[in-house]
Image 1 (cartoon, rainbow, N blue to C red):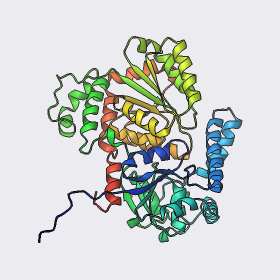
Image 2 (cartoon, rainbow, N blue to C red):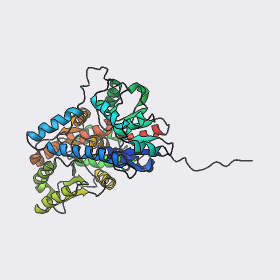
Image 3 (tube, rainbow, N blue to C red):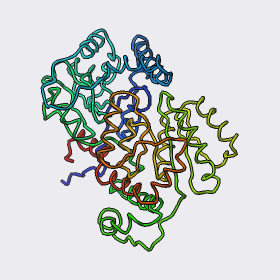
Image 4 (tube, rainbow, N blue to C red):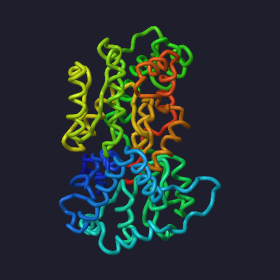
Length: 435
């Protein structure tokens, strides 16, 4: 008797848990939506969360956003932020040393978890025995102290000791590291090597393609816009053929959109003033169709209204796109689509720093928080990020940078040197396949 084998592939699913605090942790979870069982669970405001949990999380989120905005106020605001930032402070990386001893923040978080923080999530996910992946350290700690295995996606290039439990050698957490620096930092914090996997940051599949067919196609169009004098193309013809398109020809026109700059404003809404200066400076270039501008305001309706008025008053209503959505999932989908035709990304060095791996050069706005200083340094080391000059003069220095091909070079550096396959690697690791 012949046994029929099922032609259906085994469906791989996992619990995906994030946190609604800014955009970073949810942005990291979004690309994993295809493997999410039921939905992506938001640890601080999902419908399954207890009222006690919700109140603790909401106080924390509101405080974070308030402090981020407060930094813009001279003297007092900066002082308040600097005091708060001390709690996020990351120890110097060198010299290599043992940093496994828990600090006050680690012990405080453990006490909160023992009192019930995140217990709703731990209990709810126990109903189905599948892998658990979280993009925030607090749910990871909750699973750890409940002796449940969990994967934790690290969302910055360096992290505070609070990401690791009080007894790191006994942890149930497997860390999915975005870069080598995080791997080495976790070792300093005492995490066993077999609990650390370098996967890369999870980037949207719709911007990459399983065989990188999408990213390579978009990158060639981008390089064409960023290298108007063909300086980069002439120097690296052979490399472009090897890495992007074997049929590349310097004499061919690779054009499907005009030069496009996207400026993103973080979840706390700070740095909107930079956006206004960019619009004012680029007004004439925009009207001459020399550049297209996107202002990404996320889910902040007040920012949408603010920038719509500026754009309308300057006669740029149909020339500048305000990227906005009422919910974060739609926002991520919309922004990811726009990023395919974005040639330059201007952003503070948040988790958006990892998006340079899509072959996009980054103009680095001032960092907010200790971790963003490390992200800025990482971008500079990769050669794919430039610290912003005066925003009010960007119509001058931005086009000056275009002339010598440096932005094309930095786009290519991001594509070659920054890890781009994080989402695919995470899926392989979690479902017991090699990367």
